[in-house]
Length: 127
Image 1: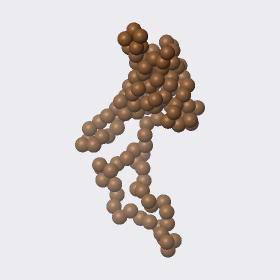
Image 2 (image 1 turned 30 degrees about the vertical axis):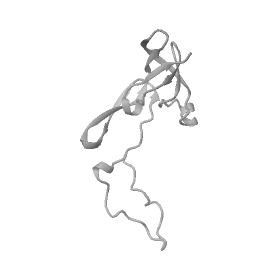
Image 3 (image 1 turned 135 degrees about the vertical axis):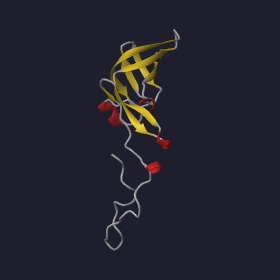
Image 4 (image 1 turned 90 degrees about the vertical axis):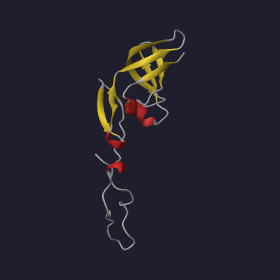
């Protein structure tokens, strides 16, 4: 669903309705952000500028976790979202964003990728 044209929610000083003088151009299209949930992985296409496609994550249940002590990356299951500095509500709902702390099978990890844009959950193990 595309967002509405800005500044049209308010009424005019006369009490009349504001109407757009034109609709959005394709390059102005602005969709709602993907909020990556904790569920089996689902990737969805997003239209980018120039008609290109980007695939973002709608939901994810696995993460690529990098362990600095061994220098290896392991694909592990995400148990839950423990902390999300972007929004406290995201913590409660289990939304995964960049900077969120997730609990995995091998320990706590901090998300370094942007799942809604990159289409993958990359994280670094926290000691």
